[in-house]
Image (tube, rainbow, N blue to C red; front, side, top):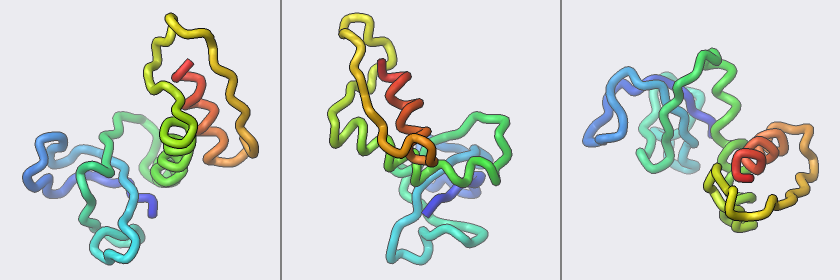
Length: 114
């Protein structure tokens, strides 16, 4: 499910160029879009550009965990996505299981969201 790699052919995408480092989630039931292969076809909407010094192998554990944490906080709980929330009192968030990958990312996302 977790995909990290360099764009080989951006197709009609205006967001990415050849050589960009991106992360994405694979598509279940669609073998061309799955991980664990040398090349994957991914949907632009499921990708984001990475500008990091972290090695690709280290980044490869992030996409699905990050999506899970973000969906829980922003879609299910309705937490504001804006980093600057000076107009709103701090929101308290309890993250159960914060010692795992999803929990650690949930804490970081909650913190930058105020």
